[in-house]
Image (tube, rainbow, N blue to C red; front, side, top):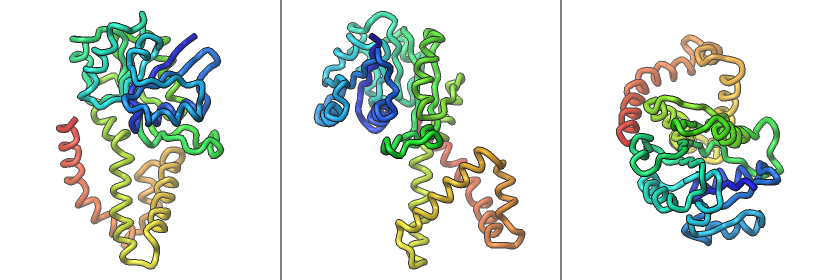
Length: 273
């Protein structure tokens, strides 16, 4: 029997758990344990997936699981790992989704196999009936591992996330900061841009805001697909923008305005990280 445990059923924890269950990723000899201090948030999970073990006691996860994914707020990570450490099984692999965790800092209170995973809400799997081979994998999941993580441990956990996202292993911790901004933060940052543009377009047309959001998001989706498969960014720009046309006018404005704003944005986010 091989047990996988997850501690913390917030936005990222619930996304990971539901993706695993909706896509039926567990093998016959694998059991999923989920722990959350607020049991009411996970009781409905048990109703839908009766084979899942739920608890509000992290000790249960530590005593039973071979792989433990910790999805709590970054300031709470140390408390959780210190709480479960006395009860951990031998050779357990700890994975945390906490941003800003540094392996060197963690070594003071945990010296075992530890991986950092940075998932993204973009990897959220919708209704099972709508899942196809084309939309099953979405978004980027970032991984970095400490020196204690074995190759089989890497293969297992990366393979699990690879079922619903595109896995990227980052070896340099400083690069992980930038990669987190580009992948994990992007859904919220891009959604804010869509929201602001939709507000303006809504006020200057007869479209409803929902109509405007639909137009923008489908355009974003299409652009992402052709950038991923067919064209470089400069090729898309050249094919869409006509010299002297409306698109070129918009590009000229954005190019002059967004460069400095982008630098300031990254400066702020890296400082917070």
